Length: 489
Image (cartoon, rainbow, N blue to C red):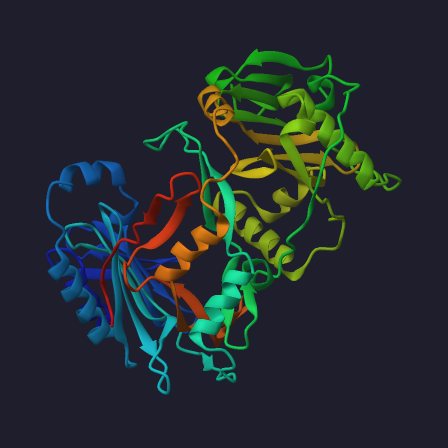
């Protein structure tokens, strides 16, 4: 441990005398004299160093940015400390890969190992370091060292891979609808943008999908028939006479059981409904006690209730949304689910709740979630989904969240022509003339990241910045600022 202290000391501002205190759940770095806490070291099960996190990482980022936003970034100090970290902690040959800026006060430096045969960077190896604008290290982690490189037969050239991606429909007609956080808020535009599901092209010519990589289903959507709810919103949330209605935070409506106190004077909201211009959120946490003879509702009946509830919230649901094809989620816990339960128990123990008490808490009613996508003339509006969770035994609406369009956005949409002036062929010509396919090392399996294969990934070597969208009326091209300051050749 003394050796680790000596190695870590130069990375603490002013290089004070430090100690490492090994605790039950973490290992803290503290000042040997003042006992000030600087951060934590990350150790694996064998006690080997894997990284460091400074507590300054958790300070108010907005306040820090205001203090130093007018100062130039101390790039030289970031690079000096990065190289020192490599020399001190990395015992393998690594190479500088990239320095980029995330925000005004968050910079990242990566070093990676390289493929000995193809001289390609191997992602997630080497180390990753984060810095403040003035060059203070906020975190550093060592990448994986146990990996295998596969060398599949390279059947496609870069140009063939580019054509393969183009013919797959990489560009799609879309509507860009800025929200309140963006400068052009409410100014709807018809654009051509890339399909986020497509990651690249394998050297065998197969277009690689994010859904396939995540082992997830890209579910189809279906139109919704007009519906006439037979219950009120409150009834579908199971509001009853034993509850008392009150005004909650930010003007929400809540219902509480006056006989239940969470703390000495704190009342628990069992049901809550909140609406504003940007959306709707409601939930029902009424207790549910499972009985052996309880049977699950048919999926079609739960879907009907989800549609009826959304109709109560937004109105004319059949004109605004399509429904993602629902699927039956009533299955045994997977290994991942079991791990999540164990982690939740551990977290409750950390917060002072014993596992036995945790097990005695009433289990919430299992739900089926129904996802609705907002569309305008058949074009999906990204980011404006609705999710409705229906109790699988009682049919109670357990939760509903809706991201709504503001009046300004709706007005802008009503003025937007959805007939493009720039054809898809013209947009593709502009996009693919600037884009190239770059042979790269990529992770082969999400659940076993030690295996690396070869793929062609989208790259923009001429401009450095990636094309984000092409206006389908004017042809104006908008680029994504990657934040890259330095990059390896």
